[in-house]
Image (cartoon, rainbow, N blue to C red; front, side, top):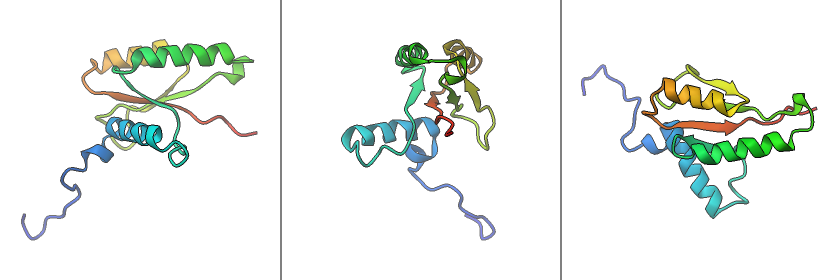
Length: 118
């Protein structure tokens, strides 16, 4: 490193700096310590967990009481930063379309958005 250079990445930190890997690690910790790791929303990494997401989205839709009560999901492309590429989805097809645009090359975390508090 040259004298004027600064370090902004640390070795072996990809496990917590990549959104998809962080979601996987948090899920593992939640499975091991459910009481301590209940602070983050339900998450899926697609395409790996695409079928599970489809099932869970269908279940949420069945539980929906009014059109305004629909579940909202936030989709976060793994290889982008600063909020680029992030969007909200209410339908499974929206997630699939984004996956095709990304060519399924990187896992994309999808999280169930928190419900609006009255």
